[in-house]
Length: 120
Image (cartoon, rainbow, N blue to C red):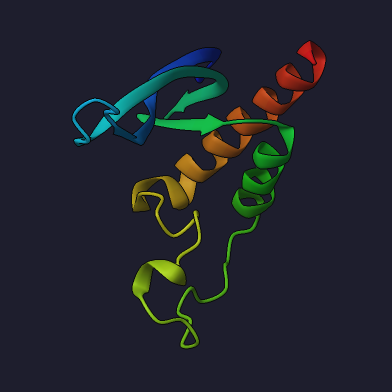
């Protein structure tokens, strides 16, 4: 059974450094400001894996991908580094992509999409 819930992510990762000059001594220094921010994500826990989604469009992309049994090759020769040619689907663990688990993930994503559409 899949768990579907909203989660508030709080972070202090937005850091801004501002160069400053002391007018009396003329010394240069840096002041670091951190600005906390938060955002909400939808979490779908299924088959021992957590999916994090920001909206209905992102869930729809994953539903389209999991509804296909056969996928095209993920190798691209027109990119420089390996991470530039990777899609978000190639980073998924292998045990989720095949067989019975793929069907369970697909059902969980479809119910998450319905739940998200009802609440928004």
